[in-house]
Length: 421
Image (cartoon, rainbow, N blue to C red; front, side, top):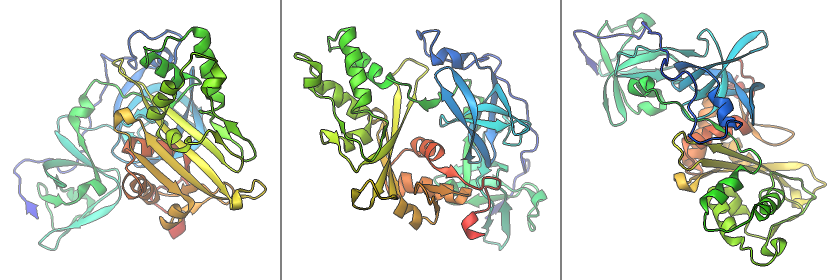
C-alpha cells in the first residue's frame, strides 16, 4: 500500500557525529572497591553509541582486571545499539575496538565503520533490515530492502510499520516520498527509537562470574545468617568444589556439601535455596546428593551488575555430554545445552540438543557434538528455538550463550549458509 508525503526522508544518508561528552567513562555502581573489575571498566573511555551492521565480530575475553580480544568469531545482528569504547587492539593486521551491545555482550568491532554506523538523531524511529528481503503492495510493485540499511519509520501499528522507500536501490514503480507498509516487521527489521540512542545511560556488561562472586552475593543478601569470616570461607570453598563445580569429567564423582561438612550449628539449607533461585539449571540437576560417574558437563555462569546498586543478574548454562550406556569408555554421542536466566529477573529456561539442532538444519561438530552455525539465518533459527520453540529463555540469555558456547564457522560471509551452498 503506497502513501504520499510532501516532505520525507527516503534513506538515512546524512549522519551526525555522536559523542557522549558528559559520560567520558563507563559508569560503575557507587561504593565499589577501587581494585575491583568495575573500577577497571570505568577507566575505559567511551567514544559514543553506534548501530551495528550484520557482521562477524570478535568475542571479548573478560578477566578480573583485563579485557582482550579473542580469536573467536560471533555473529552480530544488524540494528543493535553499541556502546563503542576507545579500548582497542590490533589483530590480524586490523584495528578492533571494544564495544558493549545493548544486550550486554562484550565484543570487538572493526573501526572505520565496517561493523557499525551512525544515525540521524533528528528522526524519531528507524528500521534496520536484518537481512535482504522484499515486500509487495496492492498495486503489484515490489519494494526491495537490503541488509544493514536504515530506513525512516513514519508510522507503527502493532506488528506493522510504515517506512519510506529508497528509490536509489532500484525500486521501480516508486518515487521519492512514497511509503510502504511492512507486516510482521520484527522478523525482518530491528526497530530503533532514537531516544534510546540519544540516551546518556550506559549499557551494563554481562561477564563471566569470577570465582566466589555468587556466594559473596548470596551472603550479602541473606543478612540473617550469623556466620563468621572463617565459616563463610569454608562454605565458599566447599560449594565451589562440590555443588557449584564448573567442570566434571565422566569418571569422577562429586558429592554435595551438607551440614555434616560444616559442623554443628551451621544451617546450609537457606544458602543452598538461595543458590538454586539464582541458578535455575543447577537447581534442576542437583536434586540428588552427588554427581555420579557417567555424567560429564561444563557450566557457564555470567553476571550482569547494575549501575544503580541493585541486585546483580545471573545467567547460567550447562553443556552435558552423553555417551552410549553412560560408559566413560565411549565417545560423546550427543550433548544437551540447558540455559536459564535469573529468577529475580523473570527466569526462563531453554534447551538445545544435538537432535534438535539437527532438526534446525545446523551443523554438528564431529568431536564434541556441539551445534555450530555458519550464517545469520542459522543463527536466528537457533535464537528462536531457545526463546520460543523449546523454551522461554530471554533474548539476552539466548544471544549470550550462543556467543559463548556455539561456534560461528566459516564466518567470512554471514549471508551465505555453508549447508545450502
